[in-house]
Image (cartoon, helix red, strand yellow):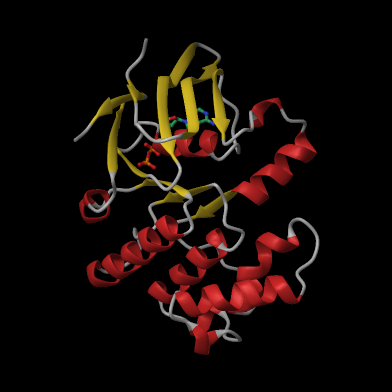
Length: 234
Ligand SMILES: Nc1ncnc2c1ncn2[C@@H]1O[C@H](COP(=O)(O)OP(=O)(O)OP(=O)(O)O)[C@@H](O)[C@H]1O
């Protein structure tokens, strides 16, 4: 049995023996090897490891953006890789929030419109959704910037908008790839604190790939990925 990270709470994410290989004409590249982990509701986990150790590959599989070569994934009650593509896309947009290092905001859209994007993926945004988005934008400290465009915001403010966008539908799982990677240390600390506060408040799970020791130290659990294998860090 590969090493698995266990917890006492109710398990809401269970990844069992995930492996990912790429075939090249003359060899097979094993990028992830038997990676297992579990998380309970409201838990957060940092994934650390050297460049090329498979962190982004693991995050893409947990986010159902990439299929494992073998292994299974359960998120809440769903077995996402058993869903046909339209249902998988709906599951992903409803239940998983993504935060990227470089925010990926739509430059032509306002802060409010950017935060409404996850609702638009499943149809339209009405008064209830606009109210929810507005409240969350206030919660991330940007109540007076609703109609500003990303170019009018600082890096930290853009990342606050990206956090609001990821959390606005109260997803079961939030995945962040280097969420503070482009920020100075003080801004990184503020953004990390806000992300963890909101994730716990909303009872979402959070998995963040990070090179930041400060962010990793402020998370409940830390795992180290080395050469495609998950090993306990601290
Ligand atoms: N489509 C692909 N085809 C072949 N190899 C790939 C593919 N995608 C990723 N890899 C390889 O998988 C390994 C892990 O890549 P991954 O991006 O997951 O690492 P990482 O730990 O996130 O690295 P970094 O910290 O530099 O972002 C690397 O050796 C990479 O070259």
